[in-house]
Image 1: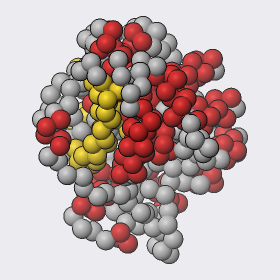
Image 2: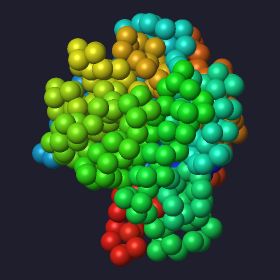
Image 3: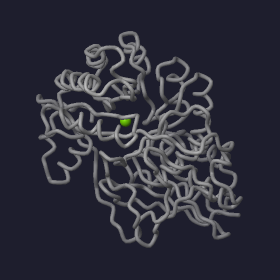
Length: 402
Ligand SMILES: [Mg+2]
């Protein structure tokens, strides 16, 4: 079998762009992959086109060797753009291999450990609505719930979703004020209130979306009684592991880090030095399933569970479900579809065949490949819409992290 084409499709799905990649072969078998470098889809599509020239005529079954060639076949190894492209191609090659052998992708990864993959839900609400949302999720059987920080400046709601919506409405960037220090008091207070009102029989976390510095993150954590939070996701940026080590000395809440990591080498200090407690691996950014399984095994050696990042659509979700099925060390999969959230990423017009979300869990599919079909004729007609992450500012005009 030979690769005959690799086609990137950066398309708008729901409330964001997704970069889908199709790999075709001379035997008529094709595979779908997805890249996860959000808001930089055109750069990644360029890298995919570059790799196309290298991979035409090659054997798609040699995915491990092709991974090495893509990652190391230039002087400047890796990096987020290239690895996001490699991720999409690698996932598509797994889809092809599964179809060619007539097995689900998890069989290529070591076989099935579990029949379904448990998920966590998110709510961007605040105040009384947050209590209502958590109660609603609990009543629907969701037992792992993630929240987001309060932004006193902006209207209530998930900063990510609301701000994207604001931008789409033409709101000026300068209106997107975020003062990290002002967010920590009200955020801590409302999380404490959630526990007071609804108890401790569920997992509660927050994604601070790396908006704090070390001192702010420590102050935030210290404002809550022990046991309020089961995890804090990315309180600070992750370029410097030493900063997380400094934060770890001041706080004892488990960390969930890694969604931005684009190789096993990025995970290295976090696993080896014990400064993440959940690995937020993203198969569409880390280097596809080939790289993800290596990180998974390494995490297992440190008794760290995977809590995969999965903010994209059905292709990334399916790849992550197959990985989750095939590893022993797994906690919960992110899914952006629950009684409190519907971002339109699972559009059945675009993805007529996709994995089944049954309540708070994905069933592990048993058909060949990933188990996803994309309506290619439809996405060919869709346009890419320029979109970038909000550029938040403090009142003094300086940039702060989104
Ligand atoms: Mg996150």
